[in-house]
Amino acid sequence: MFQQEEYDVLVVGAGHAGCEAAAAAAKLGSKVLLVTMNMNTIAQMSCNPAMGGVAKGQIVREVDALGGMSGIITDKTMIQFRMLNRSKGPAMWSPRAQSDRMRFAEEWRLALEQTPNVDFWQEAVTGLLVEDGVCVGVKTQLGIDFRAKSVVLTNGTFLNGLIHIGEKQFGGGRMAEKGSTGLTEQLLELGFEAGRMKTGTPPRVDGRSLDYSKMEEQPGDEVPGKFSYLDTPALPRQRPCHITYTNPEVHEILKEGFEKSPMFQGRIKGLGPRYCPSVEDKINRFADKDRHQIFVEPEGWSTVEVYVNGFSSSLPEDVQYRALRKIAGFENAKMFRPGYAIEYDFFPPTQLHLTLETKRVANLYFAGQINGTTGYEEAACQGLMAGINAHRKVHGEAPFVLSRSQAYIGVLIDDLVNKGTDEPYRMFTSRAEHRLLLRQDNADLRLTPLGYELGLASEERMERVREKEQQTKEVAKLLKNFGIEAADINGWLTEIGSAEISEKTRAVNLLRRPGVELPALAAALPGLALALAPYRPDALEQAEILVKYEAYLEKEHQQAARMQELENFIIQGRLDYQAMPALSHEAREKLLKIQPETLGQASRISGVSPADVSVLMVYLGR
Image 1 (cartoon, helix red, strand yellow):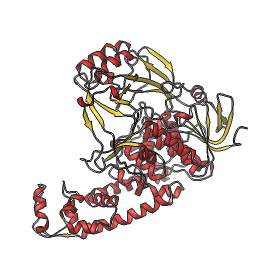
Image 2 (cartoon, helix red, strand yellow):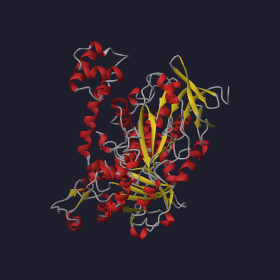
Image 3 (cartoon, helix red, strand yellow):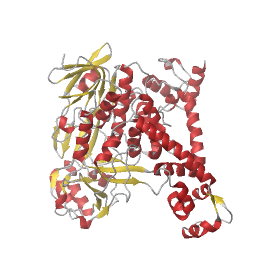
Image 4 (cartoon, helix red, strand yellow):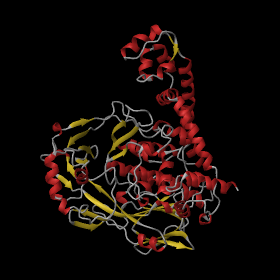
């Protein structure tokens, strides 16, 4: 026996999913072993040096609210912060941060090293130890057996990873890092289905060789926000990003490489991300466009390395280089490394329970790109949930599952398990039917009480939530009762192009008008500003949203409650759906395969119609 007699939770892979899984299980009290092929690439930002974005920022806030680490690490290492979609409604507001890539990985490693209960081992895992249908550990390349009560696989792009640059291809999980072999083959023997996916990354260039005067500057927010609800350090200064564009000359050079493109010549079998296509895919699919946007993103405070966002490519390196140099500002660009595509194995997530435990092998959990997702944020939240559930199962506690009306995390896992995915899954606000409830500003109110109950969110977090909740109620009440005289406000209303009032009104009535925001209203009314002065900014923002959108929020809550009624119909054990002739043939097939645990889950399976749900409801009613 090596190191520890037996671990509670063993995590394979130390990317964003693996780090969150290890941290969560250890904080909850499990003895954890984190096995990684390279201790120096823990929490590596393999692709762009950024966290958050549309819907992804909401996920990072949710991870933080539950007691996860990604938001804290991002706040400590970011070089720029922007709140996207501020011109739209609050359901669309999405935080995004540029990170210092080297510092991000360093902070994650230090955080894990300072977490009691986490042990590390650097080596490749080549197989699982499975006894009587239960995973009891892993086997490494050196032939060492590590025994554990549960195993979480977070292999990223390493399972039989294959890197493509033009006509060249070689094995690897990331550039200059070898792939992982053995696990896929064993899982197939155990009866799992596998598939292939692809993702890509752009070239990195030397920032000293760029002419930024030919690009548009993209600064961060004037008052930068944060991801974590804890008191993480404020960002004192920021580094700008820049925007430039491709042009017809760039496109013509890229087209020269199409005959050597692994994507167009069929050498890549896996499906790539629909919403983050390579530059050659963009100019092929959108032939009518004579330019595409390029985001020029610094990789850190001190490094000169620059990420060329929007120029992901697997074309030959000389074609990439010549095309890059025709972009405005890149005329003298020096390339650090070319872009490449990578193909890897994944396992369709319909083979999982909502806890992310596999259906075929007990106590084995999958999280991250192994489930067909793309993105650091999607991986991190799956790792968190897998870590929580692996801990709870080995300690005899009930599973922890979030519903679609509780969190974007719930939407993501529900989509994966019930619908599966045949292309890299990315989260969007449009995937969430209750997105007005699932805002980035209220993730703490929604989820910290649950994280606190689990034992993951600290007392400090819970106290901050209680205070915010109390202050929000007080501010909402104040706004509903605060009277405003016509003479005091009509001049300001005229200034902003809003209709004057003829009689005294309440603050809430003006706030419900388009274009009227609380900070500006308070600035126009010294009495209101004085009344609001004692309250926290996050409570003021929360109260404004609640009173502005009160009717819409109430309607959304009612819809969520109706959906919850279906969730309360528990399906006990395995039903023989083939013996229910009233169900459609497709429904019987899908229900048999996925084995939903509630009627609500059954209703969201692709191919199960409302009529099928009615049949099930009658059957369960019996």
